[in-house]
Length: 254
Ligand SMILES: C[S@@+](CC[C@H](N)C(=O)[O-])C[C@H]1O[C@@H](n2cnc3c(N)ncnc32)[C@H](O)[C@@H]1O
Image 1: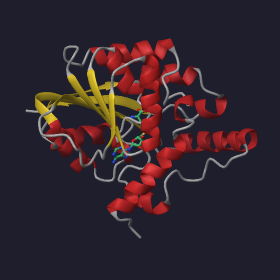
Image 2: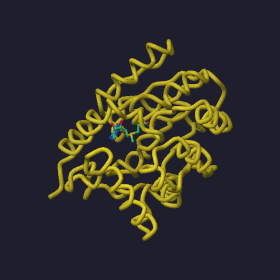
Image 3: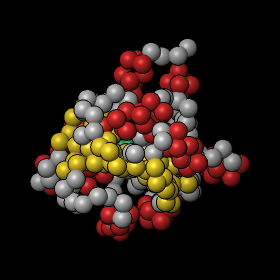
């Protein structure tokens, strides 16, 4: 049975509310080392317009990327469906004395007016959406002419035998050491059925979405170096499955 949009969004918000407390403690979510922080700045500064430009971070979660962009000198707004993820983000902005505007909003139906941002960015969001094409159209709507869309995503599980083997070993470790069952799905079966990319998204697929949206100057860069920095600091149970394809795609509105 498929969920209605409202039910699906309520479940998504609830799941990320639950995750908000521990979210930043995971390498790959929270930027936990100077090495990783500097690597993100290097990648982003090659792509971003002049400091002071207006950026919308869609599905900003606890604001890891939003705050990094504010630290770089951008005028940033972060939106998310989960009020508790936003609470974390606001708390972090306050303690780091960074000026960022956070508000509750839906990535697939933004509150912002047309052509109001120089950049729309998101990290680890596109794969979680059940209508990626509509979402990209919506992000394009709020971009100014020549504005840039940046998507950071990955293919978390490629379905290979190797991945399945590593996953089984990792699950066993987690069950023994943390006494919890990692095989329990993240979203409900009903919600997962609605997601076209429940295991993450291939870079080529993300590129297809950009092409279908008629963006120009589409280019992709691998983020495997950032993935490897994160991987170095993980416990063994996470490290053995942490070898997915990680990438950033950008394109400009005509
Ligand atoms: C994997 S987390 C990524 C968070 C953050 N971008 C980061 O890089 O750490 C996905 C986030 O997307 C949010 N999200 C999922 N669907 C959304 C939607 N339709 N609109 C806004 N936020 C959404 C979730 O609440 C969650 O905070």
